[in-house]
Image 1 (cartoon, each protein chain N blue to C red):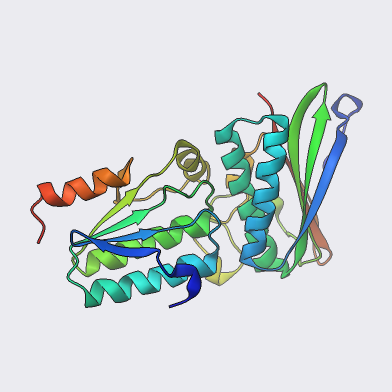
Image 2: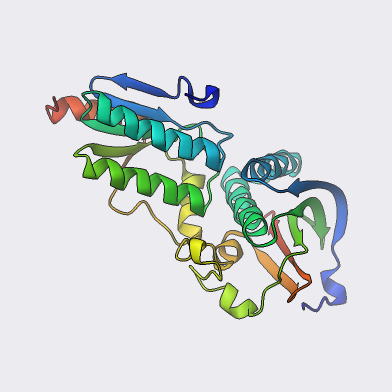
Length: 122
Length: 147
Protein backbone atom coordinates (compact mmCIF):
# COMPACT_ATOMS: atom_id res chain seq x y z
CA UNK A 1 0.00 0.00 0.00
CA UNK A 2 1.30 3.47 -0.84
CA UNK A 3 2.05 5.70 2.16
CA UNK A 4 -0.46 8.27 0.90
CA UNK A 5 -3.39 5.89 1.26
CA UNK A 6 -2.21 4.21 4.47
CA UNK A 7 -4.83 4.91 7.14
CA UNK A 8 -7.35 6.24 4.62
CA UNK A 9 -9.30 2.96 4.68
CA UNK A 10 -10.92 1.54 7.81
CA UNK A 11 -13.45 -1.20 8.48
CA UNK A 12 -16.04 -0.21 11.13
CA UNK A 13 -19.22 -2.24 11.78
CA UNK A 14 -18.88 -4.13 8.47
CA UNK A 15 -18.53 -0.81 6.69
CA UNK A 16 -15.44 -0.03 4.71
CA UNK A 17 -14.80 3.70 5.14
CA UNK A 18 -12.59 5.34 2.56
CA UNK A 19 -11.58 8.88 3.46
CA UNK A 20 -10.33 11.16 0.74
CA UNK A 21 -7.77 13.79 1.73
CA UNK A 22 -8.19 17.51 1.07
CA UNK A 23 -5.15 17.60 -1.20
CA UNK A 24 -6.19 14.62 -3.32
CA UNK A 25 -4.92 14.14 -6.84
CA UNK A 26 -5.87 11.67 -9.58
CA UNK A 27 -3.21 9.20 -8.52
CA UNK A 28 -4.41 9.14 -4.91
CA UNK A 29 -8.08 8.72 -5.84
CA UNK A 30 -7.27 5.88 -8.26
CA UNK A 31 -5.03 4.19 -5.66
CA UNK A 32 -7.87 4.44 -3.11
CA UNK A 33 -10.33 3.03 -5.63
CA UNK A 34 -8.08 0.04 -6.27
CA UNK A 35 -7.39 -0.61 -2.59
CA UNK A 36 -11.10 -0.22 -1.68
CA UNK A 37 -12.12 -2.82 -4.26
CA UNK A 38 -9.36 -5.15 -3.06
CA UNK A 39 -10.57 -4.88 0.54
CA UNK A 40 -14.25 -5.25 -0.42
CA UNK A 41 -13.29 -8.52 -2.00
CA UNK A 42 -11.26 -9.77 0.97
CA UNK A 43 -13.18 -8.55 3.99
CA UNK A 44 -16.72 -9.20 5.13
CA UNK A 45 -18.06 -5.80 4.23
CA UNK A 46 -21.66 -4.92 3.37
CA UNK A 47 -21.28 -1.20 2.83
CA UNK A 48 -18.76 1.14 1.31
CA UNK A 49 -18.72 4.65 2.74
CA UNK A 50 -16.80 7.20 0.69
CA UNK A 51 -15.99 9.99 3.10
CA UNK A 52 -15.45 13.30 1.31
CA UNK A 53 -15.78 15.47 4.44
CA UNK A 54 -12.24 16.82 3.96
CA UNK A 55 -12.70 17.44 0.24
CA UNK A 56 -13.49 21.04 -0.59
CA UNK A 57 -12.70 21.15 -4.26
CA UNK A 58 -13.50 18.65 -6.99
CA UNK A 59 -13.36 18.34 -10.76
CA UNK A 60 -15.07 16.24 -13.41
CA UNK A 61 -12.45 13.46 -13.18
CA UNK A 62 -12.88 13.23 -9.40
CA UNK A 63 -16.65 13.00 -9.82
CA UNK A 64 -16.20 10.31 -12.45
CA UNK A 65 -13.82 8.28 -10.24
CA UNK A 66 -16.27 8.34 -7.33
CA UNK A 67 -19.18 7.30 -9.57
CA UNK A 68 -17.08 4.50 -11.09
CA UNK A 69 -16.05 3.23 -7.64
CA UNK A 70 -19.69 3.26 -6.53
CA UNK A 71 -20.79 1.34 -9.63
CA UNK A 72 -18.06 -1.26 -9.20
CA UNK A 73 -18.93 -1.74 -5.52
CA UNK A 74 -22.63 -2.12 -6.41
CA UNK A 75 -21.71 -4.94 -8.75
CA UNK A 76 -19.98 -6.62 -5.81
CA UNK A 77 -23.29 -6.42 -3.88
CA UNK A 78 -22.08 -3.68 -1.56
CA UNK A 79 -24.17 -0.61 -0.64
CA UNK A 80 -22.44 2.64 -1.38
CA UNK A 81 -22.85 5.90 0.50
CA UNK A 82 -21.05 9.15 -0.12
CA UNK A 83 -20.75 11.08 3.13
CA UNK A 84 -19.87 14.65 4.02
CA UNK A 85 -20.36 16.56 0.80
CA UNK A 86 -20.25 20.27 1.53
CA UNK A 87 -22.37 22.90 -0.27
CA UNK A 88 -19.49 24.26 -2.34
CA UNK A 89 -18.70 20.78 -3.68
CA UNK A 90 -22.37 20.24 -4.56
CA UNK A 91 -22.48 23.63 -6.32
CA UNK A 92 -19.30 22.78 -8.25
CA UNK A 93 -20.59 19.38 -9.39
CA UNK A 94 -23.85 20.94 -10.59
CA UNK A 95 -21.84 23.71 -12.30
CA UNK A 96 -20.02 20.99 -14.23
CA UNK A 97 -23.43 19.56 -15.18
CA UNK A 98 -22.56 16.25 -13.49
CA UNK A 99 -24.03 14.36 -10.54
CA UNK A 100 -23.50 11.34 -8.30
CA UNK A 101 -26.16 9.51 -10.25
CA UNK A 102 -27.85 6.78 -8.21
CA UNK A 103 -25.44 7.12 -5.29
CA UNK A 104 -26.89 7.74 -1.84
CA UNK A 105 -25.41 10.82 -0.21
CA UNK A 106 -25.57 11.68 3.50
CA UNK A 107 -24.43 14.83 5.22
CA UNK A 108 -22.33 13.36 7.99
CA UNK A 109 -20.28 10.22 8.23
CA UNK A 110 -22.15 9.23 11.44
CA UNK A 111 -25.36 9.01 9.41
CA UNK A 112 -23.69 6.65 6.95
CA UNK A 113 -22.77 4.33 9.83
CA UNK A 114 -26.17 4.57 11.57
CA UNK A 115 -27.85 3.39 8.41
CA UNK A 116 -26.02 0.10 8.39
CA UNK A 117 -27.27 -0.81 11.88
CA UNK A 118 -30.89 0.07 10.99
CA UNK A 119 -30.86 -1.97 7.82
CA UNK A 120 -29.53 -4.95 9.79
CA UNK A 121 -26.62 -5.49 7.46
CA UNK A 122 -24.50 -8.48 8.33
CA UNK B 1 -10.42 36.68 -29.79
CA UNK B 2 -12.14 38.87 -27.21
CA UNK B 3 -12.48 42.62 -27.47
CA UNK B 4 -11.84 44.70 -24.35
CA UNK B 5 -13.56 48.07 -24.02
CA UNK B 6 -12.19 50.97 -21.93
CA UNK B 7 -14.80 50.48 -19.20
CA UNK B 8 -13.56 46.95 -18.68
CA UNK B 9 -10.01 47.83 -17.70
CA UNK B 10 -8.78 45.30 -15.18
CA UNK B 11 -6.00 46.19 -12.76
CA UNK B 12 -3.80 43.32 -11.66
CA UNK B 13 -2.80 43.64 -8.01
CA UNK B 14 -0.95 40.40 -7.48
CA UNK B 15 -0.02 37.39 -9.57
CA UNK B 16 1.20 33.87 -8.87
CA UNK B 17 2.04 31.50 -11.70
CA UNK B 18 1.96 27.72 -11.38
CA UNK B 19 3.50 25.44 -13.97
CA UNK B 20 1.15 22.56 -14.74
CA UNK B 21 2.40 19.21 -16.00
CA UNK B 22 0.66 16.67 -13.75
CA UNK B 23 -2.53 16.24 -11.74
CA UNK B 24 -0.96 17.27 -8.42
CA UNK B 25 -0.02 20.65 -9.97
CA UNK B 26 -3.75 21.34 -10.31
CA UNK B 27 -4.04 20.96 -6.54
CA UNK B 28 -1.15 23.42 -6.08
CA UNK B 29 -2.86 25.97 -8.35
CA UNK B 30 -6.20 25.43 -6.61
CA UNK B 31 -4.55 25.98 -3.23
CA UNK B 32 -2.95 29.23 -4.41
CA UNK B 33 -6.45 30.33 -5.49
CA UNK B 34 -7.77 29.41 -2.05
CA UNK B 35 -5.17 31.66 -0.40
CA UNK B 36 -5.82 34.57 -2.79
CA UNK B 37 -9.58 34.20 -2.29
CA UNK B 38 -9.05 34.44 1.44
CA UNK B 39 -7.00 37.63 0.98
CA UNK B 40 -9.87 39.40 -0.80
CA UNK B 41 -12.58 37.73 1.28
CA UNK B 42 -14.31 35.75 -1.47
CA UNK B 43 -17.17 33.59 -0.13
CA UNK B 44 -16.37 29.94 0.56
CA UNK B 45 -18.73 28.46 -2.05
CA UNK B 46 -17.44 30.89 -4.70
CA UNK B 47 -13.89 29.88 -3.78
CA UNK B 48 -14.72 26.21 -4.16
CA UNK B 49 -16.28 26.80 -7.58
CA UNK B 50 -13.19 28.77 -8.59
CA UNK B 51 -10.98 25.88 -7.47
CA UNK B 52 -13.07 23.41 -9.48
CA UNK B 53 -12.68 25.61 -12.57
CA UNK B 54 -8.90 25.60 -12.01
CA UNK B 55 -8.86 21.80 -11.83
CA UNK B 56 -10.80 21.64 -15.12
CA UNK B 57 -8.50 24.10 -16.86
CA UNK B 58 -5.41 22.32 -15.51
CA UNK B 59 -6.71 18.92 -16.64
CA UNK B 60 -7.35 20.35 -20.12
CA UNK B 61 -3.77 21.67 -20.27
CA UNK B 62 -2.32 18.30 -19.20
CA UNK B 63 -4.58 16.33 -21.58
CA UNK B 64 -4.12 18.43 -24.69
CA UNK B 65 -0.85 20.33 -24.38
CA UNK B 66 1.09 18.25 -21.85
CA UNK B 67 2.21 21.35 -20.02
CA UNK B 68 1.25 24.95 -19.49
CA UNK B 69 0.95 27.70 -16.93
CA UNK B 70 -1.93 28.74 -14.72
CA UNK B 71 -1.67 32.36 -13.58
CA UNK B 72 -3.73 33.41 -10.60
CA UNK B 73 -4.32 37.10 -10.07
CA UNK B 74 -6.07 39.36 -7.63
CA UNK B 75 -7.73 41.86 -9.95
CA UNK B 76 -9.86 44.96 -9.66
CA UNK B 77 -12.44 46.30 -12.10
CA UNK B 78 -14.69 49.29 -11.36
CA UNK B 79 -13.51 49.05 -7.71
CA UNK B 80 -14.75 45.47 -7.50
CA UNK B 81 -12.14 42.87 -6.60
CA UNK B 82 -11.96 39.36 -7.88
CA UNK B 83 -9.72 36.47 -8.82
CA UNK B 84 -8.65 35.95 -12.41
CA UNK B 85 -7.38 32.63 -13.68
CA UNK B 86 -5.36 32.57 -16.88
CA UNK B 87 -4.61 29.13 -18.31
CA UNK B 88 -1.99 29.22 -21.06
CA UNK B 89 -0.47 26.47 -23.11
CA UNK B 90 1.42 25.97 -26.35
CA UNK B 91 -0.67 22.96 -27.33
CA UNK B 92 -2.71 22.17 -30.43
CA UNK B 93 -5.21 24.96 -29.83
CA UNK B 94 -8.98 24.78 -30.15
CA UNK B 95 -10.31 24.48 -33.71
CA UNK B 96 -13.90 25.25 -32.82
CA UNK B 97 -14.33 27.31 -29.65
CA UNK B 98 -18.15 27.11 -29.79
CA UNK B 99 -17.97 23.33 -29.91
CA UNK B 100 -15.51 23.23 -26.99
CA UNK B 101 -18.13 24.96 -24.86
CA UNK B 102 -20.57 22.06 -25.28
CA UNK B 103 -20.74 19.78 -22.23
CA UNK B 104 -18.93 16.52 -22.68
CA UNK B 105 -17.19 17.65 -25.83
CA UNK B 106 -13.66 16.38 -26.25
CA UNK B 107 -11.48 15.79 -29.27
CA UNK B 108 -9.59 13.10 -27.38
CA UNK B 109 -11.21 9.68 -27.42
CA UNK B 110 -10.07 8.81 -23.91
CA UNK B 111 -11.78 11.89 -22.45
CA UNK B 112 -14.99 11.62 -24.42
CA UNK B 113 -18.15 12.01 -22.32
CA UNK B 114 -16.09 13.02 -19.30
CA UNK B 115 -17.70 16.43 -19.25
CA UNK B 116 -14.37 18.14 -19.87
CA UNK B 117 -15.96 20.76 -22.07
CA UNK B 118 -15.34 24.38 -21.18
CA UNK B 119 -19.05 24.97 -20.55
CA UNK B 120 -18.56 23.86 -16.95
CA UNK B 121 -15.79 26.41 -16.43
CA UNK B 122 -17.94 29.22 -17.81
CA UNK B 123 -20.81 28.25 -15.47
CA UNK B 124 -18.49 28.08 -12.46
CA UNK B 125 -16.90 31.46 -13.21
CA UNK B 126 -18.51 34.89 -13.71
CA UNK B 127 -16.86 35.57 -17.06
CA UNK B 128 -14.58 33.73 -19.41
CA UNK B 129 -12.77 34.42 -22.64
CA UNK B 130 -10.91 32.05 -24.92
CA UNK B 131 -8.10 33.02 -27.23
CA UNK B 132 -6.84 30.14 -29.31
CA UNK B 133 -4.82 29.63 -32.44
CA UNK B 134 -4.84 26.13 -33.88
CA UNK B 135 -1.31 24.76 -33.79
CA UNK B 136 -0.06 27.60 -31.58
CA UNK B 137 -1.80 27.27 -28.26
CA UNK B 138 -4.66 28.39 -26.08
CA UNK B 139 -5.15 31.12 -23.51
CA UNK B 140 -8.28 30.96 -21.41
CA UNK B 141 -9.00 33.79 -19.02
CA UNK B 142 -11.77 33.56 -16.44
CA UNK B 143 -12.80 35.77 -13.52
CA UNK B 144 -14.70 35.26 -10.30
CA UNK B 145 -15.88 38.57 -8.82
CA UNK B 146 -16.91 39.57 -5.33
CA UNK B 147 -20.72 39.69 -5.61
